Image (cartoon, rainbow, N blue to C red; front, side):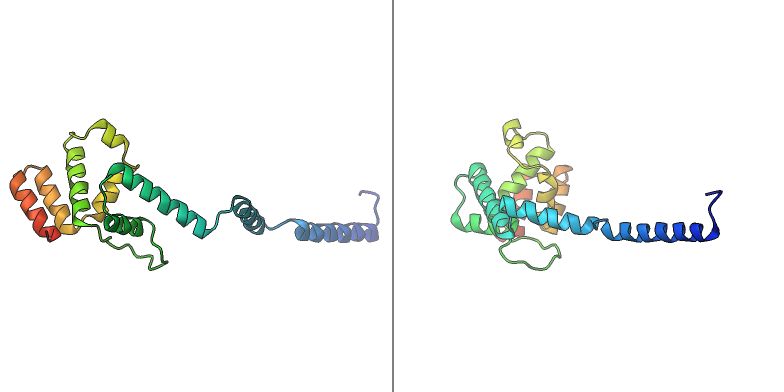
Length: 169
């Protein structure tokens, strides 16, 4: 470089710029690569929204029947629809329509867990994060009754009477 003429330096700069511009165009777009790779994986594994929803619905049915063998077809249908909605809808969270008998079971499990009385086998059978999921499903009036009951502010008979009223049974 020390012995190069001005023309040679300009030519070298031009060639370096040209090489740099070619590099920019030859580097693949990471976002585009990720999309293509994801599409290939989904295609290879047969993962479509329909397949995933179908697998999820089957899993919910299996778990519901394991945890409550006497679940009615209507209760099962409501539960499956709540857990894996068949139609795309609003992204706003909504309170699911849980049948009263299932709600009572959920309340009993919540109380047993809160009071440290839940059997280890039953606890192991519940999915991760179930306490928060149950709490989110409970109507506000049931949440308030649970809080008061667990803190000892209401007796068992009054609690269940009020729960029955809250659930409309």
